[in-house]
Image (cartoon, rainbow, N blue to C red; front, side, top):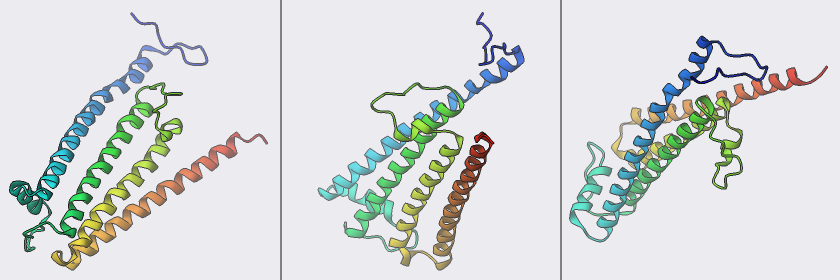
Length: 204
């Protein structure tokens, strides 16, 4: 039987407190599930990239897949690759990469913050942001990542602006602005909290 955990002040945790503290490991399957989701995104990225390269090289099946993927409902489908089509496909690939980056931040940052320390200090591949990660920093970085993803979707919409009704364009723009304001509010709240903590730590 494992010894009870000793906090810094030397007191033993009660069995109930120890059980509650150990319950953080219930999050482990969630992070493992996100790793599987990451694998799905990697597979999707390579399928789209393979079809793009195949379309450029003249493969008719790949070309049809690419044109179908970028065609908006109600819009006349393109018959060949053009600059706008390639741009839409590349933006889709960038979107996958940014979502993948978001997954990494949630997996690594969330595990480090809420489950267990990974002891990566001094590791040459330690992410720069992980050295000072906490719940507040993680929230801010996730908000910025979501804004980046929203920007990609908004740009894809604007490229095909003629295929969308005006209310859709306005709605997506408003949603993007809401994401921006939310990120600013989170950053401002964290700044206030950090200022309050520094004031309480400053000796009078």
